[in-house]
Image (tube, rainbow, N blue to C red):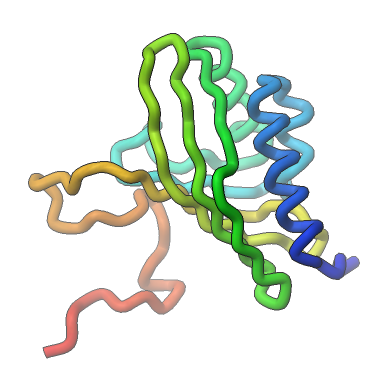
Length: 150
């Protein structure tokens, strides 16, 4: 069954997901995702993408408990016709006294659940890397350019 998405629904769903993350309750977190959802990160972070709603939920539960994670949604743009949204967020690591900012690209399923998140962090480029892209994300399969024009 395909759910008709609106900007209001998409933004509300994302904000509800962040509220669930801040609660640290894995049951609440997981319900925002398709069971086979994937959350991508920059290379070398968290040993690769989080795969599956339950894994995503348990990882955020862990960070709330261990480092006092708290996230805010700072800006939101939604495109219901493509089932995609992008946000800016802030991650407060309260026990470490650190702040991390970034963007996430969301892909919603036909049922109106989150199927994919691609996280991009505001941080310096790693001079040791030749490619700064998401770890585990299939750029070739999805038709992204792989080399600059000559």
